[in-house]
Image 1 (cartoon, rainbow, N blue to C red):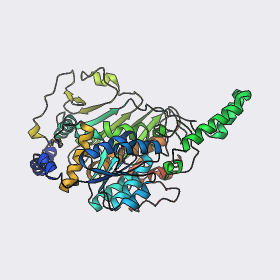
Image 2 (image 1 turned 180 degrees about the vertical axis):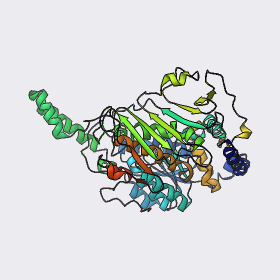
Image 3 (image 1 turned 30 degrees about the horizontal axis):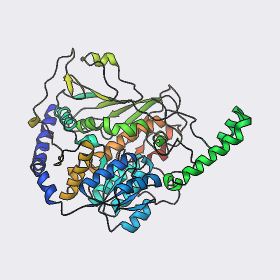
Image 4 (image 1 turned 120 degrees about the vertical axis):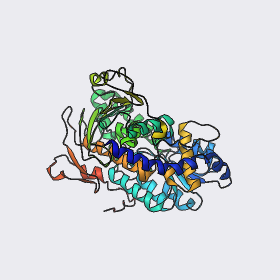
Length: 491
């Protein structure tokens, strides 16, 4: 296996040589391109999306912004006073399509794919927040569109530009701990509400209030109706729902942040954090195209994600490494601490990666033999490490990630982006979302769910006929609601 890895690295080194030469000219290129200002539009400009369009404004000219929340839209409008404002992205694309070159997309997960695909089909460069999509088929769709259109497409996992992350990925790939057999990744998320029986409607609320305190029920119901009406004066709820099936708006449980915990809108802890936490080791050992996945959870109702889950993936050998088992843990769960202690790893953090190889183990970027003896890092010239571009202002990684995207646009080279859709972000998202497919198939608390056998090439559950869990096919490929365009047929 080591010989194959050396052959791979030789090939990578040749491919990277031209990249490294180009990397030395990044600052010069940026200054030379300043007169060729990239016009940018932003879809979803609150929270993370707000930061994305602000950073894009460092390197390009923001000409249009869109958000379904009028307060958020007006707030960002104060920052970009010359940008035209829209509530519906379709109106912005139709009216401003010939006036912008690139789009940042920072909406809830369920809207990523359709908003991104529409922009790419117009020939626009895209920066879409992680996870790239809500479902597996959508991730493949955007991957294929990136290849077809040739636009510069970057997913927003900003840690990708961090030198340490890239160095660690290159160390694992070059074999610092030998042939890898197990990967364990964990997170302290979710930090938002998840769990069964969370949905609320006016009918349900009225019944509960009337039962708890009949004398005050009428006033409390009236107050809640007024609160909802006031909120909807500023929020276009239909536009927020977008491609998802209709449901009542309820304060505090969907918009603006809690949507992450709902199957119709978000992707849970895996979707939120795995694009960060798995990013390094995914690149390091090519954790793409698993053949099976199974999960356990604290229980869910097919509406809200479980409060806690753990997932196991199986990856077959490829042409330069052996098979790998990958374990994901959320809600502050961790791998077996005794196993980590065998290598001298103790007091681990809430978001980390533990990797076991034939020569030892790694915790993030620290490598040790059994017993705790340090394994020296390989020389960088013996790895495929490539630095991300750095702007003259020395801004942090979040802005630097957009700078990498802009460099790709300026040079017309989508591959400059670490998290470009075609080579990294699309396959990474597919792997992550397959984990959610397993969590969906584990609705009973503490009971291992049904095992999903997976044909990655054709995006098929090969044992679907034997599974009893409903709705699995819809979680692979959704049907868009409310009159939105259909997903392209890839097969």
